[in-house]
Length: 210
Ligand code: CDP
Ligand code: CDP
Image (cartoon, rainbow, N blue to C red; front, side):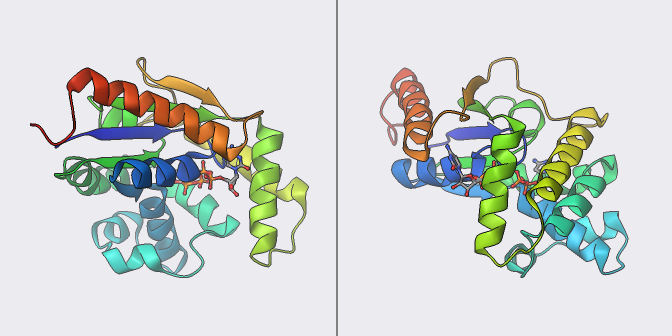
């Protein structure tokens, strides 16, 4: 079965949480494409050329320590504006999306650029202050000692850069279903996503029959 779920949205909206839950529920593989940009950004922070770093990425890079730090996130969003970096990462993402058994990919441009024909497209959002609070809580649980205001400023700067870049900007695909998680807990947000996947599977027949 080839079946792709594309989940896009701004920072800390709940994309990863929803993607993991959907992948588990439907037995799909999951790729957090933000890790590709974070891993590239991390190599650039260590002195590598951005395009060379993106081309040289290996699976082990996606497991490196520190990828979730705010500094790496900022570096990721800077190199993510470079068309040659994005181009170097396309094939890996498309191959992953087409794998037998189906896949969930989450990021910024999955429904618009990477998988424009995905069976399910979700655009997950939440108010910036709520997203920053969630990310702040998450970072604090990992030992972060910065201020909430700094996390909010980081999230907003990154969102602006992601929305305003010329190549593959953050925006909902025309056929994406919007899920605003501002007032939804994780269970409710996941239920909305699961309902969309169920509906799409229903439209195409029972999984595994083609
Ligand atoms: O992947 P993305 O950056 O969009 O967000 P995430 O890592 O899935 O979620 C960021 C944080 O928000 C996590 O700590 C989630 O547990 C939390 N979250 C939440 O509190 N309520 C939701 N409806 C979704 C996520
Ligand atoms: O988890 P969070 O939503 O905060 O960030 P992420 O998904 O790990 O993405 C980090 C950065 O990578 C984003 O701010 C984007 O600049 C970039 N990115 C992108 O340009 N395209 C993607 N498909 C995924 C991430």
